[in-house]
Image (cartoon, rainbow, N blue to C red; front, top):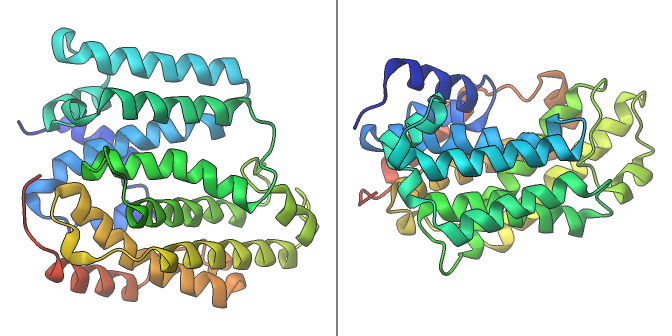
Length: 275
């Protein structure tokens, strides 16, 4: 079932925001995959942003509980929310394995309740439990999560979080305290501190991805094909951020022509298979 125009527009506003990896890759996705991936990305973005956007943990927990109930009842009762309707039409809801989705929501609730991230190891664990679970559900690899899928998703999410460092007026509660202390970072910190953070975070993400490389020939589902594209795109962006963090921040992590070429070349190599 194709998406209604209103629901598609709402999903695109969420999932394909300017500068995001999904926006850069959306046009290169196979036509048969686009609705499914668009709805899934809009849903996961709506959920993953909750711990970063609410002022009180109780508010965030209530929002997550609302989403859980809305998605559970949508197949039988329908929904008034455009993203939930899109997920129902595109077949996303039927692929949200109950146990995996509950574990994912629990990880987001835990993130709401924690005051700070102690170190890079704790941040990597959080990304594994959130971004990694998203990717495994997306790729249909819930029963036996592949470390390469988790690494690609975690590295991509870390890159996206790092983009927010171009806005020094924003509080970055996700930053690990050991890096904050190392670079003497604060709300009014100068560019040198932010550049140091970006460089360290980019190297962390690059090393994670290199530790568990993702093979393109294994990317034979809709979610897998997207992750294959994502992996190659973020490799380029992370390398740029680690080498020239000042320029990367000044450009607000905007995509370049090389990103488009990398996505096009990778898309040609991806296998075609079932959703």
